[in-house]
Length: 347
Image 1 (tube, rainbow, N blue to C red):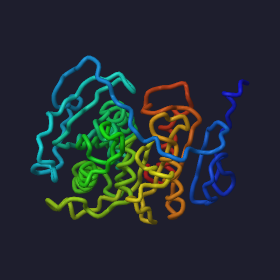
Image 2 (image 1 turned 180 degrees about the vertical axis):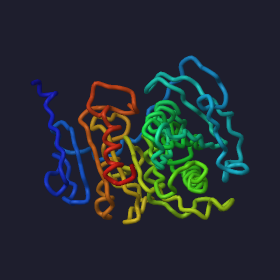
Image 3 (image 1 turned 45 degrees about the vertical axis):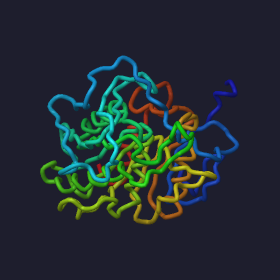
């Protein structure tokens, strides 16, 4: 076969066979399944600049609305905390064609959650979805409603979070051509609050408060890592829900960004410990937006802390594929997540 097509698929316990081209320590806690081209190593710097969504013909300008029959609920009883003093443009939802066609939300100042009830037998499991968008906007279809449709068909209650953007977490600033970490982590505030609200409403939602997970893609994968490690409230409590834990019981990060920082080191603001949530990671080696380092550097930290993790690295797949079919093996990731949830006794 042509050299460009030569690849190898490896599925093994980490203490049996490591992935070629990586220098991760051999630990039995970490399970890794790799489909990768033969390479000399991984890049030394992060490529976590999010792809810019390019609007095409605007459709239904204004506040995004969920599918018929569902209601988005503000997550804060009053105005969201720590909003900047300068006015923000009104929220808008437009149709985009890049990186993948779908709806893209900009300028969210009123964060909401939308509950998609489980269809058929209810497993009692719930997952909160953090769409990606570089903390500049939200890919609400590709990495939101479509993910919820997949979950609910498997008896999982899906909670879609429309968190505040833009500039609500570590982001790329086009003016200074640099990354900026804002003083107030507004996206994390919204994520923590939503996890607590889901636990508070567990009975009404018919879910198990001990089986509340999170899933995020791209920038949403960074929120997955933040909520999995930062458990102290990053906002002032507003009601009884804020007495509950914001630690996810399990976490899924797909093609995450913003984790790998200078010199290929993990974001120093993520204190990975044995309390970190069990985690599933998946990414493609040819991701042109978020370097594979975002997954490998976090996997190393999980391994060093003794956190149960499963990692899947694929030769091809690119970025922002969501559930859209592709010609690459990475398209089968949903079954990998389902199997992991079953092995971890959540499903």
